[in-house]
Image (cartoon, rainbow, N blue to C red):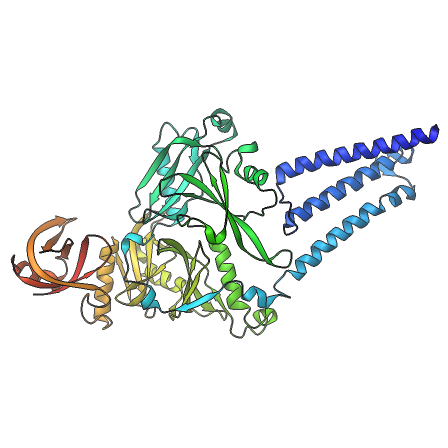
Length: 555
């Protein structure tokens, strides 16, 4: 009878330990949300945590009160090696799991898989002038995230009905929306108290910013956002995703986007590990979560809808290209000899191209010189990567040159974009004051970075830049290099004064476009002699809009 009681007591202790471990594990899982997947480092940490807790509780259950010594200096445990021996299997299991994790990490690293890492990103070499058309200013996103944040906070401050309860989230995702580069970001609850008082009604709006005009709108929704990063409990985005997809390993960056109808979504990339347990991370699937309804749909990465712009984060793409450039001749060569090694420069920007968002960054050698060997464009939806051989100054040098032109104003340059002006690779950047507001624009020739032009507007900056190109013998015939032309009969014309400058607008018979002659350019002044019915050849910039900026003409 005594033996049976002892046996029942031991069984009860084991059941209690198992229940406590399960309860602690459930709390840990609810808070930390590890993926149930062997490729997840969080899964192995969760497993180690459970083994540790189970072993600790087993150890405590074996200890007897008489073996504890209490004194003024603290509590100590005396003897009874059998107690520690009983926990050896837990310690062994903990050590085995930890060893698997460590070995898996080493075998997944670039140290032993340099060749595999180097081949993760296919890179295609392309021609700059063939791929990059003459600059279209309607697709040049010159508003960076810092400036967008300032504009967003100012816009939110004007919304009296919402500013006391909500604040602007720091997402500011750059996307293409109906053919234009914009940044979008949701609102979030201003505090835990504000969440308690507002969570039943959800988040009522998001911000949309045009990156070319800096126009900022608060888009109020018919149905509020109920699933977001600022929610708590089961409506928290991460918890909502984990309960729907317990085995998916979601990327660290989840993006806020809107589709072409303006419906808000969370774009949630799912990690794919191509090398060992934890190495060679790319994206294998994408989950689209409707921010309003919480409805989730998983796609293979190649089947993602085309309105989605962000699948790969810029940081991930830059890392993959660095693997490609640094590991061509093995891991140890990338550290020691560095023969043939190239790397990305210390910044990046975004470019709208082919209705996608591409990450732009320069490529330079690892020896610390101040020149680029080329640049790359990396598609954030497909991971398509294009390399262009364009030798010249690195972005930091171009930024310094631009700031030098306005050093008396103490403006700071944003990280530049590379554009095509008159078939010349050109850096274009915004110049901001101490308050972070865009005040001017600058253009710097990549190969001759002493050629620097500035202007209060992008068009004025470009006029000054083209004039410098002509002065330096680079653009010999005004406006004809890399631009478009049309010959026709003058139908009508008119002059208008804009911002103190006279513009001459002209239309041709049978041509829908309107041609803008800027009268501040001396070589265009002859247009005032033209009469209706005259035949004329006009050279202009084809920006894709109806209004064409004239660069030259022939009567």
